[in-house]
Image 1 (cartoon, rainbow, N blue to C red):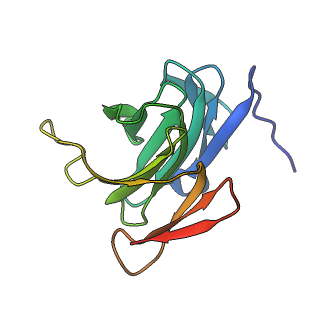
Image 2 (cartoon, rainbow, N blue to C red; image 1 turned 60 degrees about the vertical axis):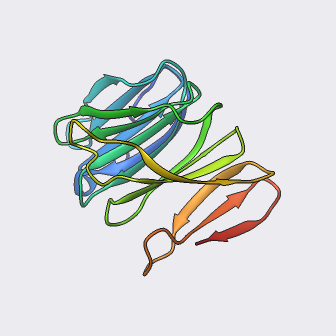
Length: 167
């Protein structure tokens, strides 16, 4: 059995949400689409001013991070499909995002050759202040994963063929 979810532009990234009942897609047209897999009907969210390059979803807190070539990271409350915060702390396209399993931290990587570890504590409050630790590399990062057991311990994959473990 197949179901086709049609887009008019290239699909760059997607995440499974709502315990497998929805897929969120990021495309070249600046919109997030939240697809109901039962009906095949999407809701459309104006998300970025450019191409959406990466997504990361956390099921525990029902939040989605989206990144784009507009240099921004956006954190969304997916229950309400509402933007919680927009962060512009990179100077080039966002290449990778990863939210940890607890929903407390976010890794972001960019073509500006930086990797940042963000604290998401208090992300839904009006007085949220972005708190991050920066790691600078001499190569581009395209993949990231949190290593279980220690907050802030993660690995990144680079275009030079290396996997760097960072604590």
